[in-house]
Image (cartoon, rainbow, N blue to C red; front, side, top):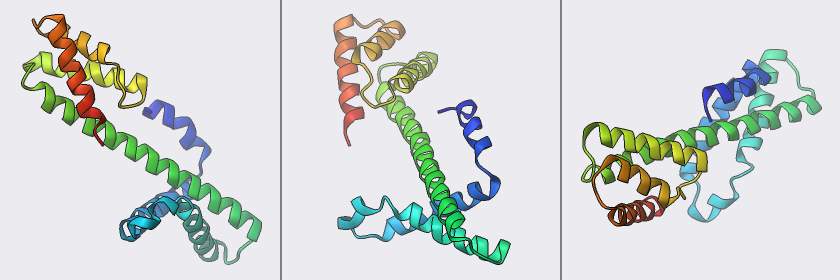
Length: 168
């Protein structure tokens, strides 16, 4: 997702909800660090519960009162936006990790501008596929275009890269 795609979403969300959502995001990450491993899969509601609690505190401070219906509505909005922030930041970190991984893997094969070009082309393919399951043929073609290796070698290298990227 680019900033241009993000802009319409940000225009729909008010500044107070965005601020409360960011606070909720930070608190949710802090809580997730200290939750025992067996409860990690049950934390999906934490942003929404924290959103309601933080919205209640905000309403008490800003408006000196609480309307239950609007509180729940605003709390769920805050939780939803906090979840969106989490997903957006995770996506940015994943792309950064992908670039570093590709650069490390391709350093022994490509040099200089060829390396930068190949990494850029593969990441663009990744963005279009929207997963780590980038097509081996795309990577093979990028390597073939930037080296003098035979097509069979490029195919083998691309399959090794795919395997390296899919390791979790």
